[in-house]
Image: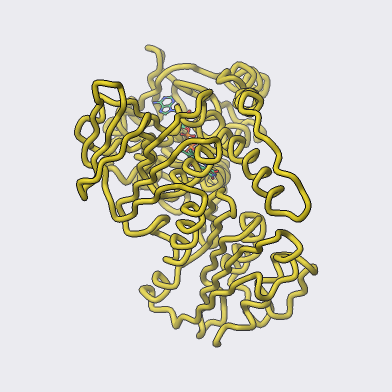
Length: 434
Ligand SMILES: Cc1cc2nc3c(=O)[nH]c(=O)nc-3n(C[C@H](O)[C@H](O)[C@H](O)COP(=O)(O)OP(=O)(O)OC[C@H]3O[C@@H](n4cnc5c(N)ncnc54)[C@H](O)[C@@H]3O)c2cc1C
């Protein structure tokens, strides 16, 4: 993305990639996961609507389409397209070798600006015996052609929830283990509670406040994991999705005097690596927020600055989503975070089917909750969350409001299309105690 921007502006650009051009998102993360989530979501939507039959899932067709969408793990088309735009594409592992110098395949590339966009990798938890049992990371999960009979999923964040739901809907018997007391523990506590109840209703065995301590393979080939309460769970596969570690090791940062830790490569507001002119970093490697749209935004900021601009990144009002069914979407601060920041908080939680015509026209057993967090003194929204159909689409109105600090009085004068989920904002705003 940043390469395209710099090429369009007439810069000479070399792109160094050790695996597939396009990165994790295109081949093993966002794109395949959302492709796999969609068919069972459609089936569930059809079942929930009035007077429709339940469609069947054709797993072969689903996996074939997923393979097509991830280009069968072949990036030659991407490589060609970058070359056509004028980039030099080098396939190999790049390593900084002093300021403005990258070593790759024994060749040295020199540049006025270097952008580190090396991403992140699955954090492997130190679990005794894990090396002796079959383990999937997001890579094996999103490219699978088989549905395991049983899976233990470690990690109750967005990836753990999404993977649990689609695997379970494809027929796998799922145990989801999360060490914090709640799923999605960085969101408002109600969010984790709601999504846990939904997963449990679908048959997922959710164990919060629990850790997997050991794993072993029995003589009959079955894997058994032991939790920290002594409970044992038999499984065919362990899926490790308990977080990501920024990829900072082995990329030569010491050659430019940069020290890093597991939190990533620290950047300033302009996305320049702190204290190293000409070295920029974007995406998961920065440890800011491991999301593709944040990586893309940082790419826009860094490109503008490389092109002699002076643009600063602003991380207010960024959407955070889980593509579960129903969707989870949030932005800004939780009520607790706002209180910790000293905000005079007014918060409201609204059961959408109570107030929205959209909910009852949408499905037979309507679902949906919306939460708003406001600054009473400044009369602006500082956060919002929703667990509801299509929430990832309509959260953006709250993102804009948080980002631009739009006055609640202005929001209250808004006119929303009837009957939509967006009308929930007006109903919730009217209930805020300001
Ligand atoms: C299962 C899953 C689902 C996700 N779904 C979503 C989603 O729906 N929406 C969302 O916003 N985010 C999602 N994410 C997060 C998203 O995938 C990442 O935030 C995004 O890929 C980060 O982009 P990036 O460019 O920083 O890194 P990456 O996409 O990881 O790309 C880094 C690239 O650098 C290459 N590289 C690394 N080191 C070197 C080196 N030394 N030399 C040469 N090349 C190197 C790697 O091979 C890789 O191609 C998901 C993540 C996972 C795991």
